[in-house]
Amino acid sequence: MYNSVDRNSPFDENIPELDMAYLQQILRQQAQRRPLYENVAIIGCGYVGTALAYHWQEQGHFVTGTTTSPERFASLSQIASNVVVMKGNDSKAMESLLPEQDTVVVSVAPTGDSFAGQDVYFTTYLSTAKNLVKALKQTPRVKQIIYLSSCSVYGNREGNWVDETSPVAPSDLRSQVLCEAEKILLQASSENQRVCILRLGGIYGPGRELIRMFGDLAGMTLPGKGDRFINWIHRDDIVGAIDFARLNELEGIYNLVDDSRLTVKEQVESIFSYYGLPPVYWDSSKPLRRNNLLVSNQKLKAAGYQLVYPKLFI
Image 1 (tube, one colour):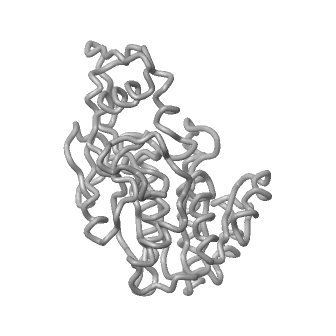
Image 2 (cartoon, rainbow, N blue to C red):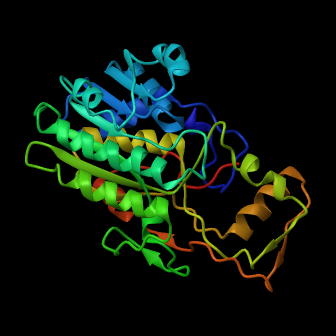
């Protein structure tokens, strides 16, 4: 399925569902030491976690997925071997989750409200990280922890490049909390227990298409010049990179973004031109202060990961 995509074009209207056979094929080719079938736990089965659970279940792993929403138990039970309803601040539940696990992925986010308050962020990220590290001391079987963080921890760099050696400079509460959670989890790293931090760009994919994100802006006048860079990553590449990190026992920090180097203006113009929508106009007299940076993905590429979607697709 992926092989039919024209990868020389920066955009394509056909974003297929997760192609398990293709991902499984390339990951088998890239595998080095880890066994293909393990007990894996995914703490937080939201947009990414659910896709990962489906992928791993199809591969033959015994997948345990968690959710904070009891109403999601039935649907998750169809794609995971075991489903646990729990919150990260429940230390007893965390201790019960980890025995017999080989790999643990932390893919948590506040539920439903992108403007969640300080207490919600602390509970979602910091309490989860602290309880996980505490429980790991009693579960030596766990070989690897993979934590999904964000490139927002680098803060605003005025359009300049950053890589994994760049100091973090979080500019808001969420990014500050993510930084602290990274530090807590990295403390669990040892010779027998690897910790891998994946710093993600903006996430898009099936159900989160770019046209859905930008479509309402058609014909509007927006503040600034549109010269800010947004670093994106497709959902399928997050799934692929997580499995690549597991198979190759990656540890430390890796940026996970695609190869697109487009400003907001360039992205919006391409999308709206394709769909025949009215263009966006920019008002440079009203500067917009937002994070603006270019994120390098060379470290992950050097490790051997090949992007499924190296460029943006509509």
